[in-house]
Length: 327
Image (cartoon, rainbow, N blue to C red):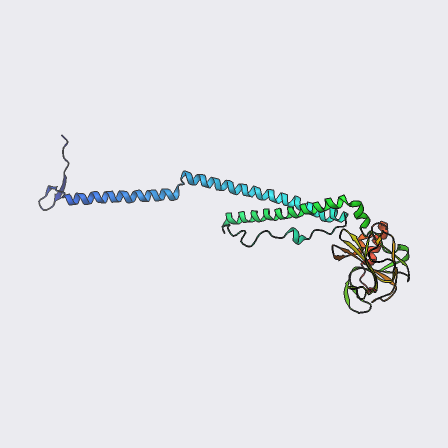
């Protein structure tokens, strides 16, 4: 039988050790304190462990997050490489492919127009990960839009290639007056008007030539306007407008006479009028314009069929001089 343990306390008055008797209430209080202390200590240990140590699930999620960030960075690099390839293709498309067929470059605002509304990216969080995903998504959306536009442009080029012969015959590719019978006196751009005496946009090229010099169609087409004081051409005198198809039109103004009628089909090099001095003009000359897609463009870039490289450079130099136009 185990011996019962007792607690003794020294009494200084009697100079004896006396047995200490613990009441039931005191025992309950001590036990309760020990239990409470143990619970509090356990809670503290658990909280500290949770703060300082990761659970297996947290470690798994953190590892996944690192993988997602790494994959996003790799995706950014791939998108940047794809964007570089697409940019080179766009440059070749504008400077080579479309130029070869005389088509205007694709409007840059069309290539880089946005996708969706202002709320398209509202779901991304405003932290580092959210901003990274938003940036990547915006980049991919931009590439998607540009690839679509480029695909449409290549479809147009394919259509132009199928009709190359007809298109090349219709393109305004020669000078409207024999180069030995005229001189370029004013080019495309802002010039001083000889009658109105102020600078304004000169949307064509002025060729000085003797009165009555023959004017030739610069490409195959159909005559849409012919005659004097045509509606919409005030100040141009006697004019001829030829529609070449494929978005090209040419205008011949200040003629002394039109040699064609509306609806008549003409071939490149065919005589359509004669040089004159009608309308707001300061002398005998031809004012010549080229329209592509409804917009007036510099005609000098279309004189490539009947000029040597040296002659072409000379015409460009003459047309670039800032001087007074003849109309």
